[in-house]
Image (cartoon, rainbow over all chains, first blue to last red; front, side):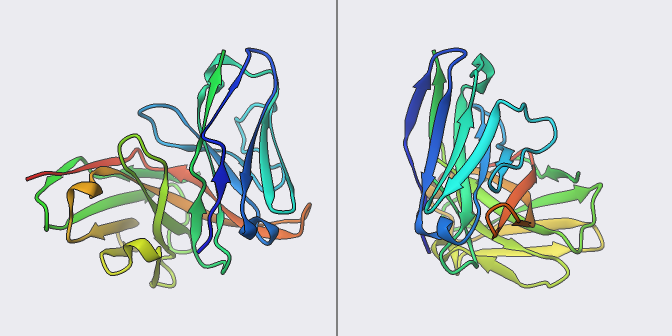
Amino acid sequence: SSELTQDPAVSVALGQTVRITCQGDSLRSYSASWYQQRPGLAPFLVMYGKNNRPSGIPDRFSGSSSGDTASLTITEAQAEDEADYYCNSRDNNGNHRVFGGGTKVTVL
Amino acid sequence: QVQLMQSGAEVKKPGSSVKVSCKASGGTFSSSAFTWVRQAPGQGLEWMGGITPIFGSANYAQKFRGRVTITADESTTTVYMELSSLRSEDTAVFYCARDMYYYDNSNYREGNYFDSWGQGTLVTVSS
């Protein structure tokens, strides 16, 4: 198995930019996906691969990756972006999936 | 996009088992892959395992191996997750999700993403 490491919490001023990172050895071989979860609700997909946004996800969300780190960037953060964000990828063997610990994004 | 509808909340005694269902509609069931995720109160998401109905065999996280069984019924397009030997620490919301494979040409990496999620099923383990 492998681990994906995320910062537990970040804050961003309304309208500013925040980057959430996900680090793990398996990211050198496999792409990451990102999920937003608001309190009491199921998670949903906001980004996958280097920069693939599902339909309906605002273009202020973007993704990138380099080496063992994947990133999700929110530009011009809005109040509704306040949520927990989780990365996911395969483990080092490629057989299983693994989640990062999650990052709580607070919009000030 | 597939819609996933999960069974309702359960209350179970320690040592017992729970079986949660996840009915898929609107997609190609047999060739899709499905995954189960656990979320304990106030905690993060935890991958439990997954199945591709057309292949039949499931794949489990080491942590849950021996206690979890994931199955699929193609006739009803339903995926099931059964967790046995329940303990209080298993109190959680369980989610099913469709697991999609992709190859990212921009960075020459393959990966997966969960594009549709069920609404979640709360399982409470209490004596």
